[in-house]
Image 1 (spheres, rainbow, N blue to C red):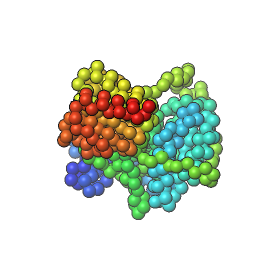
Image 2: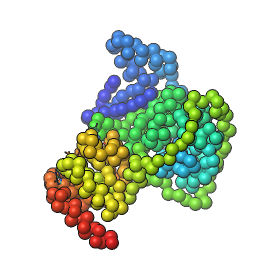
Image 3: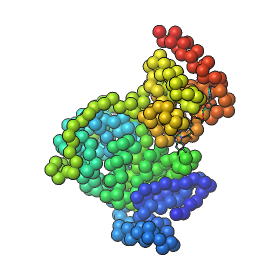
Image 4: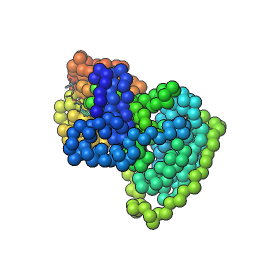
Length: 396
Ligand code: FAD
């Protein structure tokens, strides 16, 4: 492990490498020289296992990086409905591809996904590879990885992005380990250097207090998952032209180790929160779980969904599906109300991109006021009911 800079820290998985950047760090993954050096230094069984694994993978052998071109994105869809993060990837993917002067390639796997492929073109893809098969109708890691991995290996994009959703995170790890390349999880920003063609995979690290820039220098594709709601979705341009390629899928259901017995379609509270235009969030300032009623009543008046800080989730006041922040959900509503939330960085990272942030806190120095557009310094038990009454009157 090698660290440079003024305090930043790197995080990398697989063969990923964090590069030297001002305030950043260098951390080389399992396939890199630093991991081998570490294995040589201590003679522990773990170190020796790491060394053997690195040798087995042919660590140090650099693939022909020049043969990789293009930016690939996984267009996640469920039941023919694209996940919103797919179009956020199209937005950032288009920018990276333009900077590198290469094509943006969409990878769509599923069953009866023509409309998604067409929309991918309209959202900025130059080429969309469609893998359509009944066995891909419902996401399963094995089926998707088996189909996508050889296609990525053949197409050789230099960058491959997925959403940091349950599906994307699950799939990315399998693909990256099979391709023996580096994967940076949960990125909040991406950039690329057109000279070196290296992807700057940027993500918070060490309690979100530092931003780590992670580079994958020796392996391809450079893989990253991107947190939903962090990037602007690509606008739809009806009539935009691109190539849709149907890739033959050879998948025998009987060879898959999992079976889909049925799909239970329950309303997903997390999805509701992620898609909400108005979020009404509360924290420990509510003082007692019975005061959550204040949030739910307010949410009803403004047509919002209830969010929460981790403090009250950990205290068991409300379910984890309501938690906003680093270890919860990232939201980007039109309005975010923060009542009795201090505004710790681990919370604000999940809501700071909201269009309008309204905070009520009795402490004038609470960090939430640094990200708030409108702030009221006061007792929430007085301010929130008054605000609710006024909004109810105006919205009536
Ligand atoms: P507090 O920090 O206790 O703040 C309560 C606030 O209420 C104070 O600012 C106080 O002034 C105000 N207040 C009190 N009474 C009133 C009143 N009557 N009227 C108005 N204001 C009042 N946190 C998250 O939220 N999401 C995460 O995903 C998350 N992930 C984390 C991951 C890690 C690895 C770690 C270490 C921490 C994480 N945290 C997360 C926790 C985070 O650091 C904070 O501890 C947490 O957000 C604090 O919650 P809070 O603001 O509700 O509580």
